[in-house]
Length: 595
Ligand code: N01
Image 1 (cartoon, rainbow, N blue to C red):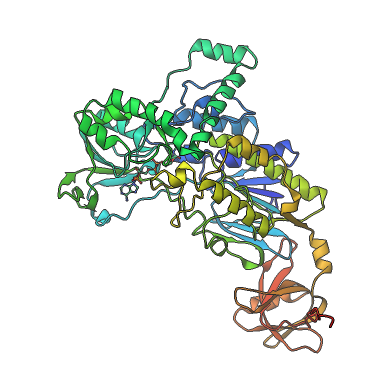
Image 2: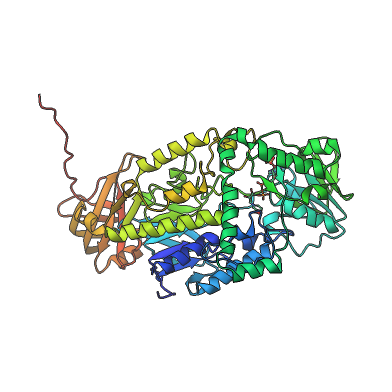
């Protein structure tokens, strides 16, 4: 590829596990003309962003790596953030991905160009790319969510979210308030409590916690992994199947009793005080919220300098947090371990697909994709870790690998059919989601009696895959071409409503042009939308005229108000209008019943 090109064949967004996996699979498939955009100046995704004390993975290390790039250097059964980031950076070096990565490139808009079957992707730094294919890999958990507690801005101390840890603040000797008791908080509370003068942990809902069987990986184990072929793989296989066996319980909550006993056992062993134990015992089925894994959280809560606060947060004051029981809990620092905005993924993004369809409109009833990867209305666009692709009981890296493989197979399908456009059929997506949501109805996520980020505001589960990850993997082996619309630009151009000469006028300017136009009645506004390309010397000048109205006339027809957009990748201008088109419309064929 030419690493500086603005017309890559494939554009990948993000350098977390998902974006990097996609990049590696593209290389393996012989595709070198791709770029990877990264908003930051370093790779790593969530493992770059989350640096809170104690940050690590609650999936066992041997399963938290690419299957094709095993890590012989893991030091612990459950790796901590620095060594996961180190692993990711090593993968980038080993696969020579750096020449493809554009750092400091945050995407601000994605627009599909119907007339060229390419995307226009713009970054905050003003760079514009025209890729044929976009693969977006923004993690589902990357937008920190801080609840709008009354008085939040009045706090006189320092406040930050766990995913934006402020390492310039020394917590030693300070009074710290921690809001939230989820997967992040159970990791950093024990660390913060070691040096803080006092920690108040604000719990709204208790979470189920399983013991974390963490320990260093011994030198002998490392030697065996390195020296005896297949051992590390077998170990990984055992972990994979132990995670996989849990899915029966997630789908049939009555089977969760075994896990619930294990969690209750930990609570019994680690919390002797019955009142505290009761406060920490959830009132919903285990698995409904993400199951936490920790062996040092309960002991940390029982330290002299730690209090668990269960009265609801009423407001934040300059001095701390006032709870509904009237107490003010003084704090110099507030840490929000309050999770991420999951439900409104793409809510504020400029992502415009075929015929001007925005992602907000497409997802007005909730996020929906086909196999978590493709979205109807958004051709040549693939999503990694999209809605209902799972990862709840399995390493997300496994899910990501399956998705990258699927995208490669879709690209191969396009090549085989000589297609410039691939788009999942709306009917296939609808049917897929009907089945997914029906299967999820009885699952522990939907019926376990809790609120969680798996469920959106309408109560629909937009996160989980209703089956084993092996079943998801199988579905992603080969794309079912009956579920996709594959077409080529050349075929569609034959199909244009009008191709031929026309005249652009703008004030006293008249420009003879060649136009390639198409159109359709838009169901959203009931109007005829026409659009296409316009070629001719002087189109540039017409475009420069700014506010002076522009018209396109064809033959003896009437002048139709038009607008010129930016050039396409071949230097031609796009033109569009709404209302009566400048070309005659073909008569609509009506079936007349034979009497
Ligand atoms: O966030 P969470 P997280 N008032 O959403 C509370 C992944 N992860 O950052 O339970 C009071 O789990 C909320 O209370 P409640 C993992 O997938 C992975 O900890 O809603 N409290 C809860 O206690 C995880 O699921 C690893 O009642 C409020 C907490 O804040 C996801 O990230 C490690 C509140 C949020 O918990 C998110 O984890 C860490 C309010 N208004 C994280 N709003 C791995 O090891 C929220 N809370 C792979």
